[in-house]
Image (cartoon, rainbow, N blue to C red):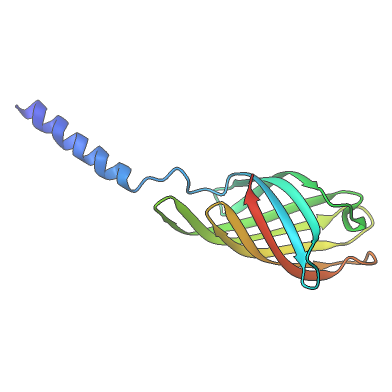
Length: 146
């Protein structure tokens, strides 16, 4: 009789523990982005990348591919970012997002994205500052999980 009660209690504990579990509480995956300038209706920049959340709240950003032709990042780039999980309810992940893309080589151009994660979409604003002619601006961006 003790064994049956123990098994029953254990089953109840497992059920209760799984109620709060969520496998979608992550920013991990492949993403595509479109960056619109304030005065334009077509994307100024676009890119794809793979984001992986680090244990310290940072992001590992790999496979960054700028899909728009731009002299701002012609010689390559490096990227880094952060993600702050502020909510995870009923399978919806939300939080703050920050990412920077720095050009490499002689150019010194910096693209900064600040936004909000809401499940499979990140929206926010971007700013580009740089030394290369034409490499400055601001606008809005949308990133979608691919």
